Amino acid sequence: MKLNNRNIAWQTAVTLCAVLLYCGGFTQAQDVNYNYVPGTDFSKYKTYKWVEVQGVKYPNQLLDTQIKQAIDSQLSMKGLTQTAADNADLYVTYQVAVNQQTQWNTYDTGGGWYWGGMVTTTSSTINVGTLVLDIYDAAAKKLIWRGDATKTLNPSKDPQKNQQRLQKAMAKLLKNYPPPVK
Image 1 (tube, rainbow, N blue to C red):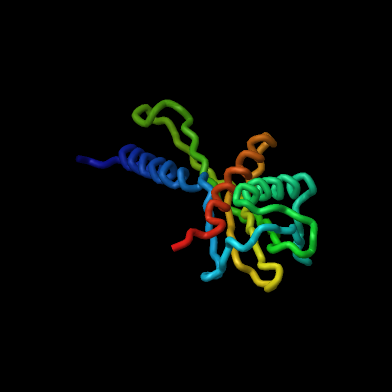
Image 2 (spheres, helix red, strand yellow; image 1 turned 60 degrees about the vertical axis):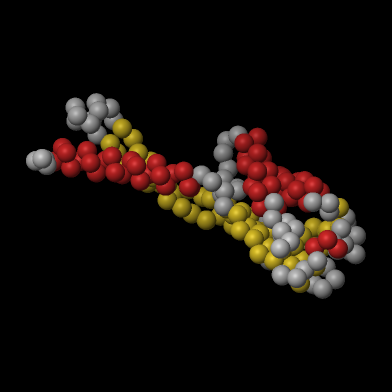
């Protein structure tokens, strides 16, 4: 088979599209990680209190409330009760970070591959929100559980979609709290 520029361009474009489609499926999923202190008896914890870490910049009041509500909902399903009292069993806090990632966009200008259509690929930078949730044993004053969820705070024009994404991420993250007993 004789290769010419059109065949090479076609093969390159097909390969690029396949790679972008394959990688695109992974970039949309929320990733969660967690870690905890082995040997901790999580069944003894019944109450928690929200605390703020000094020096941490929290998001605007609306987003802060939405984040806390999403976490509260999940912790409630785990049997924990929120309290304002200083004698809570757990202290709970979160931090958010915005990372940047390259997004690839491919456009077909029409005409098809055989008839000489062009494919243009451009890149743009997108912000992907990461939320880190820390849970401390209040009496011992030590971190006992930490989890993070990426692609959680990825704002769109639809506030309902943002809230659903946040709820889904917190459900996925707190699925691992308390950690499975082995």
